[in-house]
Length: 324
Image (tube, rainbow, N blue to C red; front, side, top):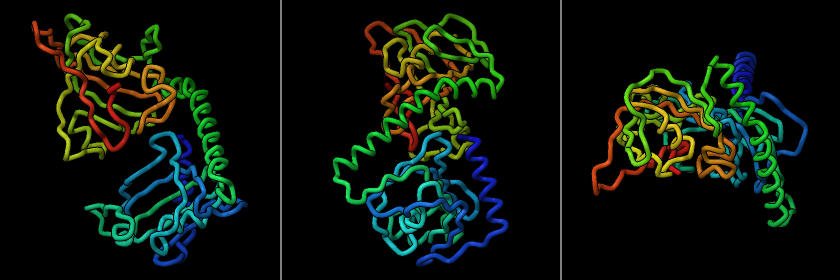
């Protein structure tokens, strides 16, 4: 998927350098990069697509390629002339295009927050349409059945590709991981010292969670959050305390905590069977492998009669931290 992003990025640059934006309806401007044969998207259609959203200053607001899966959209009636749905209505399955959409109209008509640091007039969207399921005259039951079949096929594809993606990631980074019998991979950056935690202990740690693409979805480290543009001023950035062996986190995270002494810095490569599995959750798709970079700050023995803390459950905009 990262390769696809790079190819698409080069294509956009190439087209942008030799083609001018055309005038669309309202205040929209557009460039069509690839125009396949087929019916254009209509209101009610189901769409699977990749999207890159950025400001005119090239600040990326959203990039579906970071999550290694497409986005899913139901085509709706336009909120204003030249909006996002009007842009999608110009495309068919297999098409790709870049659109400039008026920022003030997006804010006023679609409640899309205006980025605080942009001085541009437009938000820029690049779409690649992967799949369209037309609503047409299908009954709701038949239409929903087709969408369900699509999701099942996507889930099966993700399942089939997961092991290869993990292997390719390890090779691309030239890693030499240790593999546990459960299938957890880990690479120690810095070896700690002292005893390892046992069930009932509490581990105090900093962590950063990311996808194989490198996209960070959650971190307890403020410097990392700011550097990777995922900083949320509404949340505290501080080490997390996790009770070991209490099944309060996903299995791969729980297993990993029992392997390392205080002072260890380590990366866990967690296959989906030790993560969120075939169901995923609200933010993490099915069969999604995850990486957690951990620094073990302390191992705390329980006090007699004191309840053990459980894993915190941060609520990031993207996928959640490793709460079960």
